[in-house]
Amino acid sequence: MAVWLSQRVMARNGSWLLRPIAPIGSRSVVRASSNPGTLSAFQDRPRTVEELPHTSFVELLYRLVFQGFYNRMHELQIYEKQRYGSIYRNGLKAVCLNTPKLLEELLRNDDKFPCRGDMSLWKDYRDMRGFGYGPFTEEGDRWYNLRVVLNKRMLHPKDSAQYGGIINEVVTDFTKKIQYLRQCSPSGDFVTNVANELYLFSLEGIASILFETRLGCLEKEIPAGTGEFINAIGQMFSNSMAVVMTPKWSRNLLPYWGRYIAGWEGIFTFAKELIDKKMELIQQRVDNNQHVEGEYLTYLLSNTQMSTKDVYASVTELLLAGVDTTSNTLTWALHELSRHPDIQDRLYEEVSTLIPADRTPTAEEVTRMQYLRAVVKETLRMYPVVPMNARIITEKDVFIGGYHFPKKTAFMFCHYAITHDEDTFSEPFTFKPERWLRDGREMPNPFGSIPFGFGVRSCVGRRIAELEMYSALFQLIRHFEIKPDPTLGELKSINRTVLVPDQEVNLHFVDRM
Ligand code: HEM
Image 1 (cartoon, rainbow, N blue to C red):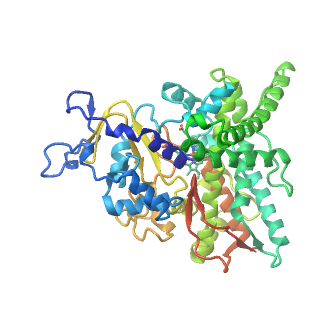
Image 2 (tube, rainbow, N blue to C red):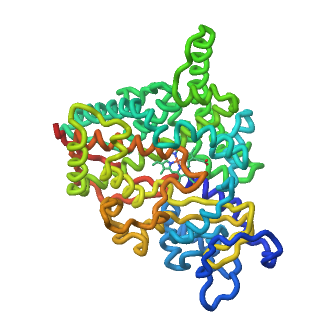
Image 3 (cartoon, rainbow, N blue to C red):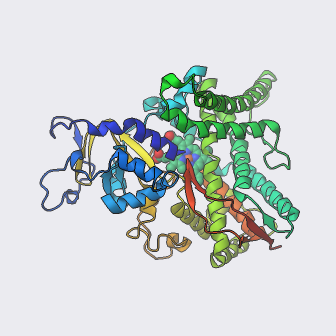
């Protein structure tokens, strides 16, 4: 999701960088680093944006179209880093940051209300229908107030622990579905298109938390309404690029805008229906003087600071953010485990020794498993599902890497290039969960891999996502030995809003029990 967002940022805000820079001292200036070492020994003044290494829009187009980087933008980060270094201006005039140190400098000087960029594309539909904005689309102090409400019951590990029961229930159903699918295969253990199954699992998981109801995604037949919702998400995303690239006046002439809006219509209709049902239930209980109980949605709906329209928007955005992210990370994790039996054995040992076979772990237990956590961390390092992110520092000028940037400069965080840099991670293309174990070895730079972002605008769903991923991996590894499909060629990642495999992932799930 943030990839898509950051592309919008670059496309719409890159021109800020071309603004003339006023002399230092003529405006409020904040040093991003108090360390004078960011200026070289021969450098007595911070350099200007014009002095940055840079590439042009035409070069960018050439690379996307003729060098095949169009859906490999994450690999373009590595390519451009080799050519232009750790800080440069890209073809859309955003300043790319490519080392943990530069990332830290910028993020530690983020605005009070951090901004990823112009979200008008997402706002258009909400404005047309009179809905409020959610955490992705809202800005400034209104965004901050919204996050204060949304963070409660979600962001702290203790908050997410309350969803342990429902997540375990969904994971158990998923494990049963995998049992069923493998039994249907000729070999009795083969499951095709695992990413698709994990997508349904993630949707069921996040919806059960957000709507306090089960959608039936793990049934043999997916309910019609749920299927339509999944298609609506696809329609909205697949038409959004065309909507950005075509002028506003063509919206009624070309088909993209209509399809894009129809996608949003389907997404909101689905979410609204479920929220309205919940409201009716709450109202009935209130009318009957009964105690109102429930989890996240009940909490939001009974929150006086939020109007129903705000709840529609926030829950919809949480739902959108919470599906592809966890499902793709789990797909990558299973793929890597299937290719590394030694790592899988070590994980199985942890899983089978810490919890007796006749019970599932609680949220607290599963989040304490060191090796399981390391496997997820390493998966997110190698396949950062959000491979790039963005910020516009709107309130002040900043100094980063010895350069002076006027306020409103757009910055791109090249997470993929950083997590695959030998200076930060030895053998960066090798899956090594051990590097994250706190067993006396030197820990990697904390800004080397920040898959959930950093600071007040970081991922609100982090703890839920982690709990979902730990619980799913726990149960899958306890039940099955995961083996690769020998007919699968080399699996590569492509950038489709999030980092996804370039081909179907099929796996053998061999019974351990
Ligand atoms: C593997 C799983 C996930 C990863 C790697 C991930 C990563 C991210 C990243 C990198 C950001 C941007 C942070 C920043 O700009 O500093 C973000 C934002 C966000 N994420 Fe996640 N996410 C995941 C799962 C989830 C889930 C399950 C939910 C919903 C419950 C969620 C909801 C959101 C929301 C609403 C935002 C926008 C926050 C804001 O702008 O205030 N994410 N996520």
